[in-house]
Image (cartoon, rainbow, N blue to C red):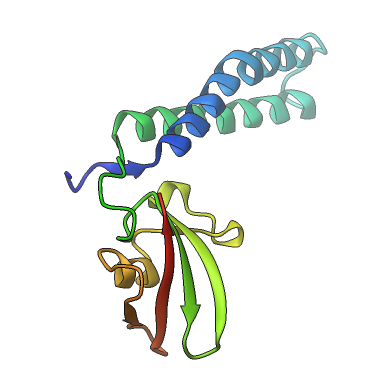
Length: 156
């Protein structure tokens, strides 16, 4: 895998393509209409609606550019490892040996990371520690306050 490639799961690629399509085909035309409407109000130098529409246009165009770049430079992760080895794109159930709690995470690329919804980046310390390990392995996560986890289950 090339260093400049952005890692995406197939699900993540689809999500970003849908967002790009929506921005280009729905939001962009709406913003264009908002700008036309604001221009029709007259003097642009003191027109708050025009300024707001132009700001919105800049945000939308920036997001479109970001998504196009992301999709152009992405590599879709294929789950080729056996079902009991942790890798990017898999869901893993971990037992915290220090707290005796069970948590489930999906390991994704950094562009898809959403820790509040259980999606962690392959670049975070927890993911780096468990990638390549198998069900039943106990792994030390090296961070400011190291802790140990046991891999209970891996789902591809």
